[in-house]
Image (cartoon, rainbow, N blue to C red; front, side, top):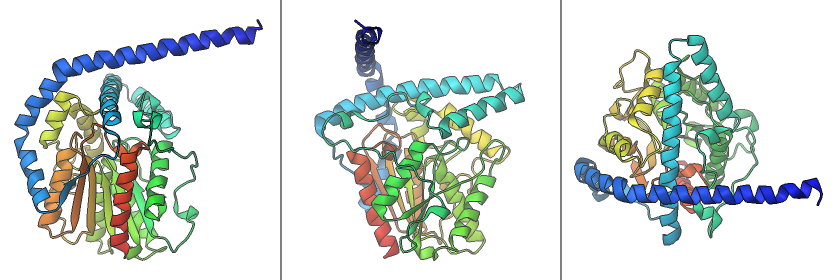
Length: 392
């Protein structure tokens, strides 16, 4: 047997070992979840009565709507277990990196180099260090998986296909400190294609070197530049997670500048309360159903805010006045650590007489749109209907 063929059995053996370890880890996690996390979640759900009441009120007012998953029942159950296991691993990795960052605080040069390394990995698509298993969900191995294109053109003002299409300015989340990753850019392209828009990826300077309100001002300036390409009624803006705080802060700045606001706002799993006052920050952190915890959110928020109060309405838009804002569409999950932020945004927008819709899923996946799946495709279809209403 030639040397190259001798390697093949060893590769197969390594694959078998990895598969066995993966399923063993899944079984251990399931046992741990059934014996500990499940009862903990049940207890927490009884505590979190106020949020449940708020959502019920929003549903009664036809503001909030629970979206039924399009995935097969059994595949959905398996995917939920996998998602929670992945969330647990991601949480451990994030906390570990935060500990290392804190240990470097006394050495400014080392801390800066560490942060630059994280940004480099993220921007080059090596964020697998953050997300080990979520290359695709269980659904993609069975029926209904949605493939992800490798076509990754720059989403910028100089690469617009047709000026007849609406423009979509998208601000990607990164905890205020990380740039957009290639996976996020691909997700933006899928969203833009579903909505029939030309995508423009928002660019802003990063914290802690450029703290609040610099990122908000950067996005406001970029939006003003887009007004030279299209009328405001043909421009939509969107964001996910921390990008939602930056985007909504930018819209407040634009309103103060007396600039025409966009036709509509799309938010995915928005993080808009840097004071972390919502119950979901406590309950999801304790139950570990989210890949993020209060300490990771507080760490990023402090780097972004610097000396500013966390309740500043431009920094934390849940405290903002939504008077004069465009139509608003919010997508989230009831298991998301930022779920209460979405609820507060919907309530405040409704009180300001802004047309608002909040769609939420029963999934432990944070920002489900980031992975190709039936639910992500359905989320984009709902977003497309919203865009059509805004630019009609």
